[in-house]
Length: 173
Image (cartoon, rainbow, N blue to C red):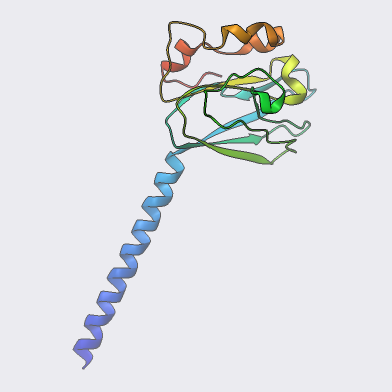
């Protein structure tokens, strides 16, 4: 009887340990599939940015923007007609607007449609607070949205990293 109890106890402990190990591995896998983009600026607000502002990710990855700027609100907003802007996201992709994020707040989105995604901060677009994500792969032979370049503020257009630069695989600050 004691032997049977010990066997059941070992079995239960083994199963519990296996579940704990599985949960730990899944948590690590999810953390690896998430990327974070900081929203920040100088203390006096004279400069603002996304870091990184250029990033290569894989389809299915989650991107989380975090406002790390103690003195400013920011948004992450896609360039697309739903936001009264020219379309600078892939056909079939869903546009987004985080609304105003207070310091310490975040916004997350999972990207599934491959292509180039350009986005901006609503109150700081004219200051060049823009970013570009490439999901999967993209054509490096041409600027993907050259037909809408003239509709962006000069500072925003100048701050967008090139597709070729991003495809090298290193985040671009």
